[in-house]
Structure formats: structure tokens, C-alpha cells
Length: 165
Image (cartoon, one colour):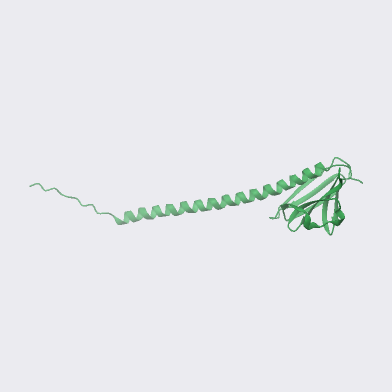
């Protein structure tokens, strides 16, 4: 009689455990990389959004100044203890001033026909910011916008018209 030998393979539990631990470590490290990447992406989007918001506001203010660039229409003055960039224009309905200023953590603008009765709470918010300042010297208007993060954006505009009244 021929006897067939039956082989019984023994499973090596150490080898299986090694593969299981290796697979587990791969899964954990993959998850950590995905979480880290998501956090980096979130921070990049946040910083880009903040930068674009401030830069857009600076360009908005620049366009407001350029559209008001007429003789004697641009001035930096103070109302109620707040430094104000005043852009005056004459319309069919009368003389109006666009007041641009910093109040309550935001750069604001207020279109008014009576700037002497200035109330900073009535202005529309342009953007939240850490600060705003403006100065005029001859035909050079300079203003600075400080972001909430403390980054200062300066703009210098050479006015085309004389600003003496």
C-alpha cells in the first residue's frame, strides 16, 4: 500500500503579526499625512483669502481716489478725533464728500453732504483691518492699510490735479 503523506503546513503567527503591524503602521502614517495636508491646505487658503481681501480693499481705495482726482477735491482731515480721507465731488443734487476712515476694527466709508456732523458708526464697512492712515504732501497721497495680522500695505498715488483749495 502506498501511503500518501499528507503535509500539514503550520502557520507562522509571528510572520502574520509582522504583516499586520506593518499594514497598520502604513494606514496610520497615511492618515497622518492626509490630516497634515488638510491642515496645511486650510492655512494656505486662509492666508490667501486674507491677503486678497486687503489687496482688493487697497485697490478699491486707489480707484476711489483716482475717480475723485480733481482740483481741491482730496484732503486728509480730522472729524471727531478720527483721521479721515475726504474725497469731495459735485453732483447734480449738491456737494458730497466720501469719507474714508478706520473705526471699530474696520475701514469704513461714508457718503455725506454734511461732513461736519460726522458719525463714524454710520459708515459702510469696506473691510476688517487692524488700521488705516492717510497723508497728503503736495500732489502725493499716501495711505497705509494694516491687516488684522499686522501686515502693512502702503499705497502712494501721484495725484494729477492740484490739491490746493
